[in-house]
Length: 467
Image (cartoon, rainbow, N blue to C red; front, side):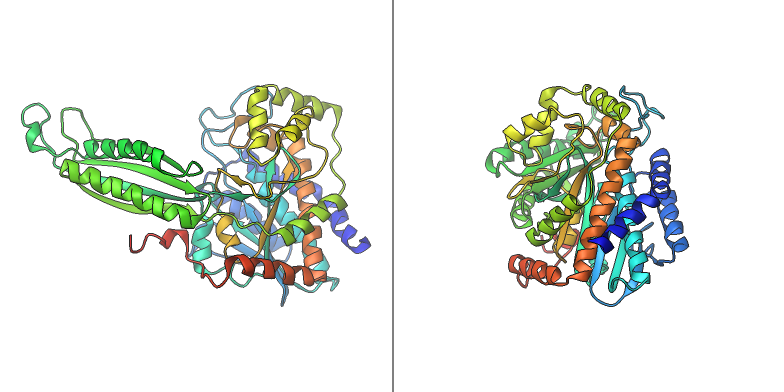
């Protein structure tokens, strides 16, 4: 334990570097596929620290790998740094955007990537001195909010890993033992015939009528699909002027299900609805995949090891000012809103009620076993390639959900920074154990292969071939 403690000490001694990085990312938020400055900031740090940096722009803009050590085993630590549109917010318990309508780190990815990089850098020190053997990689992964990792996964950059670890900012400290929904989003485009809507409407064929009928068809489909499945959609175009029969109309439809094998039949039914709408209106329809990801496959062996390390690392201490800020920020939401945020992570009702009495979670948990959260993450694709596990740490007050202005405020605060450093230490300690005791890797891979079997990975972006 003494040698592993050196990792925690190194992260603590160098915390100002990582806090400065996280604050810079927070002040200059960049949304998915626009993370030029965010990626450059992290790559520059990695080069300065002596990592072998491999830029992956030919596969996906702003993606990179920073590697240290050599040989097997190879442990990947995943990082993200994209922000969300419309969530600009000051570090304030009142809604007060820095830039009205601007982007903000409402999912805490300024913390996520930074903590993962901090863990990798601490481990590099141990690898450089020979205290550990093996390879550690930090993956700078852009566009998580647009499910970007399948682009990287399709190229094979995760395929030689022995284990992948990651974390996510949250309102509680817990092993993320839950699964997530698989998801595929398609763009549908209907093409009709334009005509004067008053003089000769009978000569036109309305693409907007077709898109509207598709939406109605999906609404009727809801009665006949699994209650755990989801279909969301928006209309992205529907004509230019009301006195012209629309020749073009398009929409984005996202389908989710707890398992990809159940999602694909439902997706085919949505496509059939679109084809039926085109047939009814005398139009034509085309479609293509916008984005998609698999469900997360939890790994109990790795989850157990993460939990041990959560207990090894001291939880953050908070000042009276931080506790008051957390209390004030949490008061902007109703008790029911906060309760449902906790229940959505797989907590039981009794535990959720107990946690709601705390402004900041100051314990550790192991929640979500057997649970599937309705949201999706592109970490799912990685988990279908290599044994993968993750944790959540408290960077927001209890009951605060992500994708909110409250999460942006907390992600730029000292509360967020303390949760980030705690996550970095847990990831670093867990990776130490994997490198020092490879039996953990062997057991994790046995569990992984017992679930996956011989099923080859096919990117979610390619699953529509043959539809």
